[in-house]
Image 1 (tube, rainbow, N blue to C red):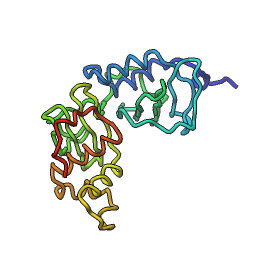
Image 2: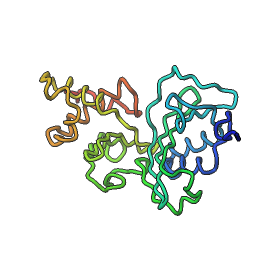
Image 3: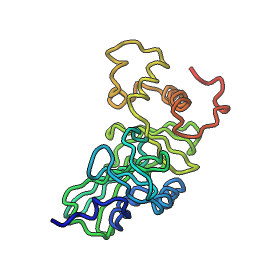
Image 4: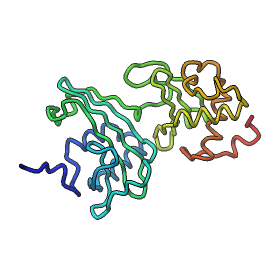
Length: 237
């Protein structure tokens, strides 16, 4: 029985795999362009903890450490062809390695040419735009006008922070963010305080000030985006 060369490590990313990853990393944004350049110089060194499609990129002589938790998600894209669909997730670099997920429907029949595909990704979003794919509403809270912007997409159930310096949209875990906000506003009602889905179903209940201040507190601990906190002194609740 012939062995699948894609299961032999280390190996190069195939041109098709690279095209799929780059669909989630727009070249016109500096931060994503830098990730393209990093990926160009890495090899596939093995599977992650979730098996086939969940791959780890690193230096050729590196080994996969499954005890290290996944880094935060950097980019997400969906690539749709007439014959199938590809879902791409790229995690942030951690210890000189990048975890990626490439999963799809009818993958073997999908052509190399992305010009035949419909591609959508959160990476290309900039303030003033609707949500990717379905053009649903996005609530924007500008901490610094058009430079540091918190985006909440209720239909997608996603939160991200746009950073104009890098162009990267940093995803924020919904539960962690909501918990910080409940602590910040002093909500001890378990029915509402322990229900993070309310951030999307009841978004109008929360003010821009509450959302902005939650991001400032959350970011101090998790450092998702570089913020000059001296601009916000004495403005927390």
